[in-house]
Length: 199
Image 1 (tube, rainbow, N blue to C red):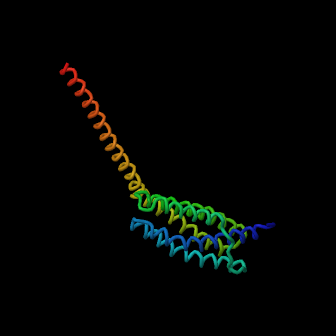
Image 2: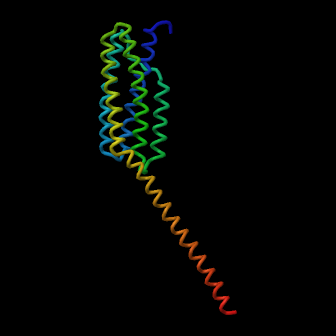
Image 3: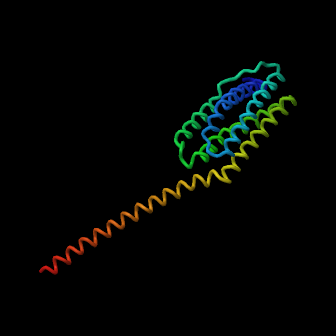
């Protein structure tokens, strides 16, 4: 690429593809969440994402280009990881914290990308594009903050509860083991004492 304009268009295509992929992934994350608040957050962001796709189409129009995506490898990888996280934590107390982690990774990528695109639009003197990209950036930042709030208010504590349960189970198992060992020791001693008396 020999110009900032070409670089801007290339990144725009990347994010157009990214948002379309994310719009397909969000319903799965919402369905997997066991927290109503988290489900609502994912569904709300789905609506925002659909609106962002429209905003990106307006950005394409502002530079005289037709909307066209370019495979966003970063988003492909992030969604694949989200699927793996969902599978590994399904039915566990860690599920909501894990889903938030996956969601925030995507948000951070989008925040970085839209921050860059907005700056480039400003440098290129495209105020319309800069304004639209700024709106998307604000929505991504708000979505990330919402996920962070849910993590701090409930999801992380739920995940920590799983560790406490494992600790209790481990403690119970140790108690049983200790009692068995004491019983075995007592039995052996009794046997020795009995033998001694018989003599």
